[in-house]
Image 1 (cartoon, one colour):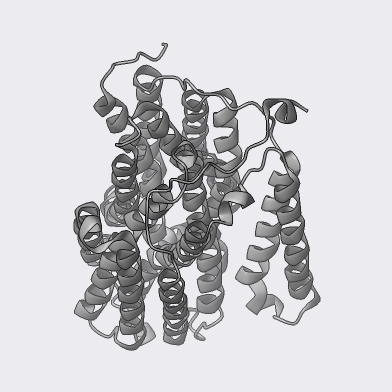
Image 2 (cartoon, rainbow, N blue to C red):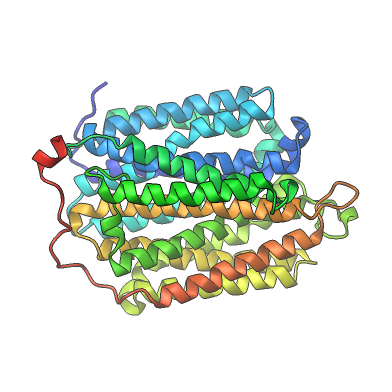
Length: 475
């Protein structure tokens, strides 16, 4: 069925909001159920974490690749393909007989991560230029809130229906979303000539895998082992190669020239650190809450109760995120990012030191939600205000991708720390969680410093970054 131009941007926004919320929830929906999946599929704590990390890794590669394809062949068409792949990945995950198939299915689901840059690009194409920043802020807030909502919904789904319904239900939602995209989202009026830089995609996936694998398994391999040091060395070489290829490419997956803008590179580094902290909290706080009291800590909470104890974070994130836009004219987006980073630092320190009572965990996660709510939409706003309007989609998509890369790194590091502190009983030790949140405190402290370095915000009036000519692109 061909798409129709309804003439009503609200319909387009509603469809795009449904799409990004669906994928955002799927990113976090599985994290509270990891202990259940580990037991059911007879695997180890370190291996089951890859059910979460593999998705983030796949998203990190698929996002810029499909974003580029969308610019070339049409965003609506590419969004349709990404959602179809996501639905197939959910089907395979729901039927997975073992952990290997489940991880492979999550990698396939990562193709759906392209919904973020594609949605921002469609917003850029379909909305008046003066509305783009506010609409992008709304969608960014939905993405953040969707991640928190997934954690809360996971418990009732697992306890009433079983963990496989964490994939059956999203598959149904994604199928409906796919039909809505085909029906109501207009095809892109803009095309960018060029070709896919597959070499850049190979280098990007290569250095991420070479980095994340030893981060996750370095403790079991030995940090000084040949495998660990060899992969770290390979990651450095591949990263340097990726930067070189992107700088020389006429069709870069991630535009390094845009990254040189002071407001862009500082904001993106803050996004990297926030992504590392946010996804680590999503993945491991529910696990902490479910640890039996016999371990000497934890609360022995069910999956549902663990999700409910994360509810303060969701509520504060949603409320503060919705206020972020109205607060920006009074306080500025930079001040919100600085404040959000500082509150995240306080929250991580509180959790590291005080986690013996449920109210202490609720307080720390609520503060973390305030920090996320303040910073999440404000970072997107900073990007939008500091790039030419025609580069809004690419720049915001890049910011979302960098956040996901940070999430991959953060969860891998946290997994390595927690699985490196195991009691004789086989349960994680308290020191693993304490050390993890001290690491997140360091991330948040670095985010404060970088946020202070962000230049004052302004809607850019400079000429766009010089782009290659059509003749060059066709070469």
